[in-house]
Image 1 (cartoon, rainbow, N blue to C red):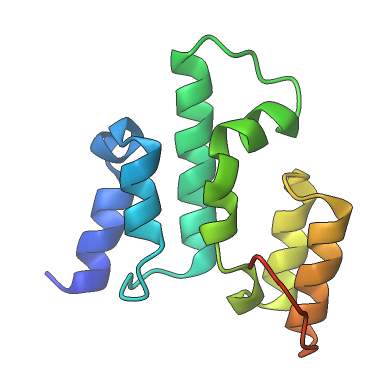
Image 2 (tube, rainbow, N blue to C red):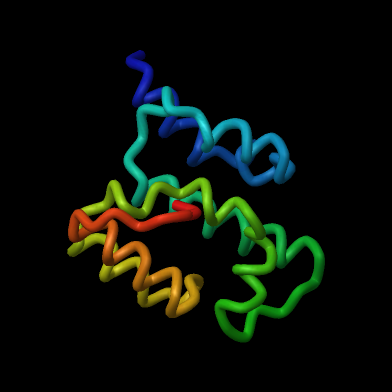
Length: 117
């Protein structure tokens, strides 16, 4: 089985949902991860929602999911997404308006000082 297929299988597994934040940080920060950012984003959303459920956190909006993700959100390489993909993703409202602007500037090819992405 090829590396990408194995990575997808792992990210789609129930074991992925059991990972702690530190483990996920190591995995998704790797430049060797053969997955696109949209898939990583969706997987982290699934993980955060699962963790909220386990901790009996009722999800009323994106605030709880963002809190659960914490600094993991900055490991997602949003600027590597197409503008079309990012526009779909940003509707989840996990990013602040400032973060969205910063990412849109990066997508447009502008140099953004002190970017967290």
